[in-house]
Amino acid sequence: MSLLQSVVRHLSMLALICCTLHVQAAPETLTISNSKAWKPYSYLDEDGEPAGILIDLWKSYGQANDVEVVFHLVDWQSSIDLVSDRQADIHAGLLRSEEREQFLVFGIDLLQIDNQLYFHHDLLNFEVNDFLLGSHSYEVGVVHGGYEETHMRKNYPNISLKAFQNNEEMINAALRGDILAFSADLQVANYYLYSERSNQDFIAVKHLYTGTLYAASERSNTQLLTQISTQFQNISSEEKQRVLSKWMHIKTVYPEYLLPIALSSFGLLVGGYTVLLRYNVRKKTGELAAINKDLKFLSETDALTGLSNRRRFFQCLEQFRNSQFTLTVVIIDIDDFKLVNDKYGHISGDVAIRAVANAIKPMISDDQIFGRIGGEEFAICCCDRSFEQSTKQAQRLCELVREIKLPDIGFTPLTISVGCAVYQQAKDYKTLADADKLMYQAKENGKNQVVSGRILPVEQINAEAS
Image (cartoon, rainbow, N blue to C red):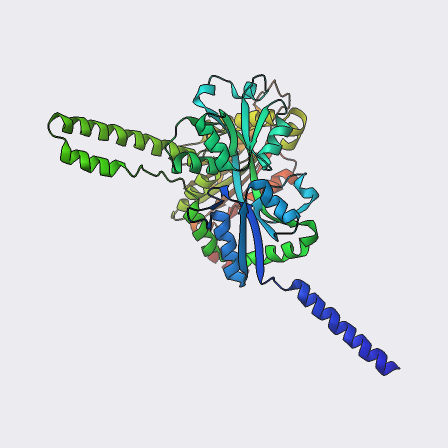
């Protein structure tokens, strides 16, 4: 009898192990959904093939983990329904919200996006905050099922919304004059407005939010999502950078007909026509140069504060790493900012963010980069500053912010916690982790203060350790 029990027990253990291995094994085919018209993140190209930043990232995931990836690109709400109905394994990337967390679980964070409110030039006589109070008959375009629709309904309930199935439909409606305002992600709007057509009718007038895109799955599929999040680390940093470098830019597409027209006209026109042609070419070149300048500004600037945006800040920081001098990296976080939003609303939160940015700007010299890298988080970087100089400047920033007066909010004094990391050798900088750690230490010490740290050269640390 004991022999039979032993055999049964071993067979049970073997079955359990096989089941466990079966559950944990990576799927041979992974079905991923997202929008078919969300350039540059996810869309169908002219040949009907999936393209975009998220598409390339998931293709890289498939190659790194020997998994076949199949994409279902549909309208935005449908892409979420596919996941919730288990017709797709994973959503390629979307923002978290309370509504979505009722039926989705979120995994690895992929990218950050900034959402803006866009006005047609006919609406520029409106003060933006007054417009958002809704005392008018204009509709604001949003994408049905998109996070911007939820955000607008929650934060600006008096605004009339007009929902579209995807971003392309919405922006085409705007260009036809069906709507004069819409909410869209900055990079997406730039691609549809500027990359495919030269359009100066719409401009960004207000930063609405910054968010992180996460991979997501239906709640009963949590184990698969956890496994995929772990396997995402198999993608090399070089491959991730290759994907981002390919897509994260704003390109201006020059009208293809300009050169043929110019060449034909050159052969046909003589005398006075030649003078006129040259005048028109110079005029068009000037217009295109102006558009390029505007696009470069948009792609590098935070719409809410006018500071360098996260992308521009990290570009400059990467250049500073090649310096032969010291490197100072400062992280600034507004204390208790959530209380401002919760008590006074997001519009007042925007006012507070701008006030902090404006208070700090006068202290920033031409050789320093000052940017907004997150919701209420700022950063400064510069070279060839001593530890004492950097710490003194950071302490002065705290003093300037404490002097801010915001009578309409009443949440004063505003304060900041600052982490100041000074690298004796710029090449030793890797990530914001050192400055971030110092900033959180300032938080733990009571906020409203600076914590500075000297980051020693790697070889010196190794020598001391030995």
